[in-house]
Structure formats: structure tokens, C-alpha cells
Length: 113
Length: 111
Image (cartoon, one colour):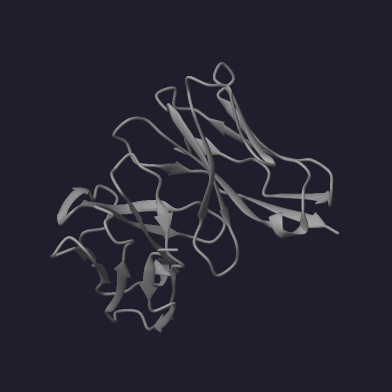
């Protein structure tokens, strides 16, 4: 069964450092999402891509976060510089289209010290 | 502004009994609702959904009920099994909008 792949699974970094997360969606899925989930809360959308284009990044802290999906397949989410409050689970999801069921990857657990 | 709320952080039931997980929403524009299940160290997995034109959708042991007038939905699991122990998230959207998730409810099914 096709799955969304994410790496790394865990990342520990010091504040002010740069971190990057990678996501490979299910083959053929045009829509890709990055979510942040803080412990005890539900996932919150950071950015949504349709193919290589950003369609929603209204909740992305653009002063420190960036995301790209250059060839419309895999994607990278970057944080620079990381802050203590960025400690969370970062989830990637993909879907055939923007209104289709979203399938999530296993996530990257980030701890900022 | 929490538009989707799951007021029970946890629920414990006996194996074989019914589990009822609840979710309330405030945005009357929501017209599609979903439930996801999440095991530790895994991403959320889609479970079941319902459109606002329906008030019930059933898939095996899982049934979702929607009460639009009360802006309330619930997920029923019957019979509950130990493998159902997980965090359950409800989520909602309207056409063209992002998914908005609730805070999640930890379900524990005791053997």
C-alpha cells in the first residue's frame, strides 16, 4: 500500500539553528500539505501545495518558515532559526486533489533545546 | 477561535461495549466532516466521513452521526476492541477550505 514518507522521524536541535524536513507524497497525489501538531492539540495547516504552487500559506510564519515543492513531487519544509516554541510534530499529508481524502505520513518529531 | 472542539480529552470503555466520541463545531459553513485515528508514533489515518446532506454514515463497526441543528457530530464504535485504543480527531471543512481539526480524544479499550 502506498504511503507518505517523511524524514527524519526525530530531530533535536538547538535554538537559532536551521532544520529541514522532507516529505515524499503518495505517487500521483497533486496536493501536498504540511501540518504542525502541538502536544494536546489537533494538526494545524501550515502550507498547502497544488502541484508546485502554494495555494494556502496563511498560517505559515514566513519570517522563519519556508516550504518548497519545486518539481511538484516531494517537498521540503525549513525552519531558520528554530525557536523553543517550534517543538512539535510536523506532519505531511497528500491527496489526489484539494477536496479528496488526505493521507498522512508518520511525522517528524522536533525538539528545540 | 476553536471552531472544532472535542471536549473529552479521554474516554475509557470495556472491550465489547460501545464507544461514543463527541465533537462540536461553531462554523455553520462546514459541510463535510471526517474522523481520523492516530496511534503513537504514526500519522493520523482516515477513518470515516460524512457530508452535511446526510445525518448518518456507517462503515462496519464505525458509525458517524451528524446533528446540524446542534452543530454536533459523534463517532460510535461497536463493539469496541483493544486495537481501537488510539487518539481520535474530528475534522471539518467547507468546499475550498482547509481542514480544521479538534484537539483529539484518547480512547482506551480495556480487555
